Amino acid sequence: MKQKIFNVTNEDLVLQEISKLRPLNYNRFMWWRRFDQKKRPLDNKSPLLDKIKNGDLEFSHYYWQAQYTEMEMNEKRNECIDDQHWIEQTRVDKQRRRRLYEDFEKDEAGKLETLRKQFPKEFRMTKEDYDDEILEFGGTLLQLYRHCEIKYGKKIKITSKRGRPRKYGN
Image (tube, rainbow, N blue to C red; front, side, top):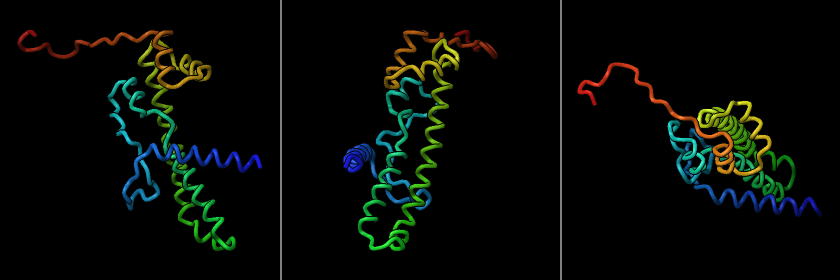
């Protein structure tokens, strides 16, 4: 009985997260992806705070798409007569789920690596300080940013005067 209650809340959570995404039109090169973030990600040169506020570094939406595919496979399980019929019906879904989990792992690894590089660039902290903070801190990413801003302080950006001087002395 507890298993059933957990699945219902899990399904509700998945549907809630999927509703935050925008549906994609069919793309034969990325056929397994059916949803995308509502906001477009900022480019790599954008400040870290802007990326955090835009949601570019939040938990990957590919996970929720994979969970949604799992739910669809479970629904097909209830409709199918025998196991062979279910295997035939879910062949494409299994490939979709596998590719979405691959996208999820790649996306999450990239986001974590970006955070690990950007925090020490933004604040007077080392990568080891970042590792310690990320393990101890229990809030959101924006709260972690504010916490590091107070605790470590921002780095002063020095613009170098390299190269040939300006022609008109400005």
